[in-house]
Length: 129
Image 1 (cartoon, rainbow, N blue to C red):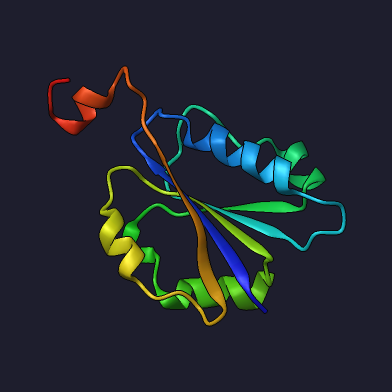
Image 2: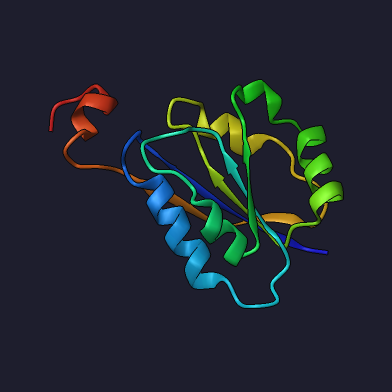
């Protein structure tokens, strides 16, 4: 079984959660297999329980980047058998290193979104616009 992985990366408070929820809602079709959201950064926006139930989705929270290993992904694949994985990536972690880690057989990165808030870009990037 193939599993599409959608990665939502970017700076804190740039709209990753809102973007992820929008993409998940727009792509959901009744009868879809379960979708899993891997939340690596808890921000101001949350994942409403009622909405998650309506669209057959579950959130798994990750506190430390060291938790995310091939074994972690394989446990999710075996236990949940998701059709899609949505990752809200922590903007403070190394994205390149994360993308170099292996995924279970049949999983592939379908889309990678990068969110930036122009109002805070210079502050988080350590540069001046």
